[in-house]
Each structure stands twice: as structure tokens, then as C-alpha cells.
Image 1: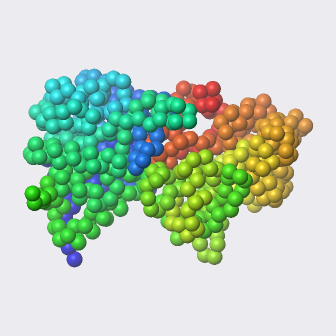
Image 2: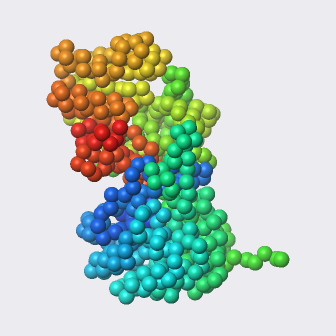
Length: 309
Length: 271
């Protein structure tokens, strides 16, 4: 029986399979080890790390919505120092592919996080978070304006030779423009999409559900939007590897993103519901390849058929 | 050692407890890890994504029927998510992630413990009384509710307390059963009468947990409280269930809790 080859190359980064844990849904890599060992995945993206620890947003931070959820966690994190000291050694020992999600309130902050990580072995690459909708400074302000984004990416590019991904905002007015700017700044790949800005209201109390009023929508509710965006960016910039995410819950969802043009995918919110879901997704992906006679999963990228007009 | 699992189970039994609360018993396909009273599970139907999240329920007890391990949960209906298992037919397949979080400090067993339950806060304390029945611990169970009709399983609670050599103290806000007043006031009265405890374990609404912590401080008895908070994952990664602590930081209810030393909580902010 065919054993499909699941490996993919996101630019220069070779992954054993295309399923990566998304930032903010898998802790610092080993938090869900009992459900999903990180070394079984294509990679793990850490919770967004800033130069110093962050307390995050006030409560309530999360709200349930139809086929999804809103979050406004506010990038609570332990800071890059503590991550490198307390979390990274165990991940390194496990040979997990670790992608550090980088967050800052200024361009200097982003550079500082990367520089701190550069002296550490066991980090496969970086993902710049320029699309978090839940912080008052930084993040999204870099993700909406192509020129600012290109500058930020270029500043990070000069301090590392490691793979550099930029996680784009679906809330940006010009998605392809921001993808092009990331590439121009030297990004090796773009991750899309981050959460979509949304809101929930408690009608009985006449209050926003979230303390921050707005939050990021995730889950299957956003899958069609994410798929369309991956498709658009891949069509416009076929040479730029795209890491697709947004509501993926099954192996078939992974295939959908690959066909739309993604080279790899990230799974996020599904892990909240089923902490071992990524292992199930990998099994489903392998089964799809066997059933469909797909020898190499990498050949699925952009392999969408054209509809007859 | 952490032994959390995503377990397959079937809704096997259901019974009404009060006009707003019901009990469900799930039968598992395979062996389940041993749970500590105070630990919880994330429950969701195997099919469908409405509601989108699983729901966190404290374990009311574990057992076995035929060869299958079982688990009892008690649910108060407050919205569509909590109403779900009241409506789904027996035999519905479920996924149960657990046991999760930190439970009550059962080992070593406390010599004499006041179990203080407010409303649907009962399950972990009933579980604790059953678990401690095999030890030297004596458990008094303070069972509070708004009215007599809202008291959950008073006979069963009495039997559970008496099996440890302890007593049941029913308390209702309106005095329609047991003592009139708050369950923490009843605890305070017993202490003032000279009854002594080496531990107070409480579960219920936040103001009740704060009051229980204050009673413990007054009588120099360590208090552990089982907290409740909205959570998406229950396994420590969504960061949606934080509770402020008195040192200005916060904890995740699901992972550092739900059972914590009451003196660690910043009650002013949390309530």
C-alpha cells in the first residue's frame, strides 16, 4: 500500500508534514504534550513572544460564537527570555520544529526578540505577528500599511538568516499589497490568516461580551474567507510560499488549503475543542492521499482544477 | 504526573435533581484515569459544533456499570450549552476530555473537613465525601441553596456525610429547609459553637467562596476553593479563564485550579 510522502518545503524550511500548531493555541510547545507531542507535527508556532512579559487583556477575554469564537487575550506571554530559558531546552531535546512568533510594540521590539533568539539553537524560524487585533500598540499597525510592513520585515531580515514568515491580517485593506510588501522586505513565507475582527453582544445585559469590546474571530466560521485569501495571494504571488490557516478541523480542510495554494497549514482553534486534533488531521490527510493516489502531499499545493466556464 | 485524555463515552443515564439541575451519567468505552475530587472534564457531543466549545463540569463521582467505567456530572441549566444534555437522547455519543486541573488535597486525608457547597457547587464536594469515606477523615457537608426545592439530593448528601462519621447541614436562603441564611453563616455558627475542622473545602458562587475563605481566616483553618470560569479549552492554552491573585498576577482556572488555596485569590477583583 502507498505510504504517502507528507513532507513539504516552506521556502528553505523542510517540514516532515504540513500540519503546524498555530500561535496562541498550543502554549509554548509542550503544554499539550499528553495529547499531541510537538515532534509529531510539521512544526509548532509559539505563543507570541515580546521582549518583556505581558499581562494581557482584562476578563472576559473569550466568547463563543456560531461555529467559532472570539478572543481578546491581548498577547499575554512570558517574554522571550523566560521562553528561551525555561521552555526551549525541552523542545530542542524533543527535536520539535519550533517557530517563534514575534510580537512587539515597536520595530525595535521585534528586532530585540529575534536577536535574543539568534543565540539559541533549536529555533527553526520566526513568524512576525503584525496582525493581532487585540493590543493597543504594535501588532496590527505594522500589518495594515504595506510600506510600514516592508520596513519592519526588512529590519528583521537583516538580523537573521533563519526562515522569516509574516503572519498577515485579514483585516488589512489590501491583502495582496501586504503580502507583496512582506516578500519585498525579505520574508520567506506569509501565514494567512490571523483572526478576523469581530464583536459579540449579550442582549440581556446589553453589554459587549468581551472586556475589550472587539476580538478576533476564529474557527470554521472563517474558513471560507481564509481559503479565498490564500487563493488570492497564491494567484498574485505564486513564488511566495503561503502557510494557510483559518478554521481547519480535518484532513480534508488541510487539502482544501493546499489546493488553494498553501504550502503548509496551521491548526489553531480546533485544538481548543479537541486537544489531540492535529494527530487525527494528519491521519486523515494520509488517508486522503492513499485514497486519491497522491504520492507526495506537496504536489497538492495550488493543484486546484479550473471550472469549465 | 499528568494523565489527561480525550475519552469516548455514551450518555447512559439522566435524572432530575431540582427544577433547574439535572444529573447525567456517562459510560466510557475504555478505562479512564483516576480522578481527584475537584477535577473537572470538558464535555461535548461527538457530533456537531453547536455549542462550539465543550463545557467544563466538575466530576460528581466515578464508578462502574457492568464492565464499563462511568462518571456522573451535575449540570445546572443556564443557557443552550448547559441545556444540551437535558435534551439529547440516552445513547448519544460524547467526548470527554479529562480529568483536568488540580483537585482538593485529599492526600494525606484531612482529619476533619467542612465541605461547603453552594447550589450547583455540590458535585466536587459530594465526590470528596465519597472518596474520603475510606479514610479517617470526618466530613461535615454544608449544603446550601436558595430554597428547599433547589437543594440538590439532600438524602444522598446526608448518607455521604454520615458514611464518614460526619453530618449534613442543609441551609436555605429563605429557610424553607434546614437553617435559614447563607451556607457560610451556618459554617461560622458551628465553629462558634466549638466544632473544629482541619480543612474547609468550598465550591459555589464567587461571593460564597470569598466568605468561606474569610471564615477560614477567622478560625485559622486552611481553605481550598473550587473555582469556575468560562473556558474554551480547559487544558491550559486558550488563556480565557484567568482569575486574579493577591500578588497582582493571575492563574489559569483550568490548570493552576480549579481548586486553589482561597487565600491566594484577589477576591476584591475576582468577585
